[in-house]
Image 1 (cartoon, rainbow, N blue to C red):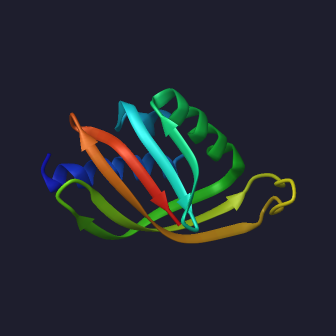
Image 2 (image 1 turned 90 degrees about the horizontal axis):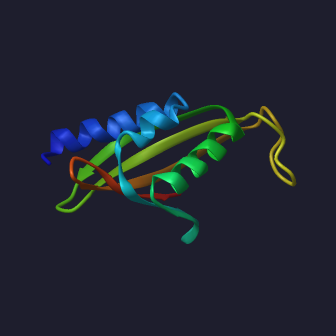
Length: 127
């Protein structure tokens, strides 16, 4: 894949994420996609395959009344693309021992994407 195709695929994934469109997100992924979320240097979530990814994506969508990823920088590497992300979300419901419904959360992070067969094969989110 050329960089323009990788960029378009990542943009489609992020746009679907922002619309809470889980099927749209899945349409950009390989069936055996690997997903990892790393917060404060610790791996806290990992999925393998679209079934596990769907479950995680649906859980995440249910937590927020609003959410938005904005790509602020792109770095095209030989085997991956690293994007810098500004993220904002508003909780849909109270989280036990956590934020209340309506609370806003903002994060800065990065997502690294790898590709196979014209789709995204691995995503590593770091915040």
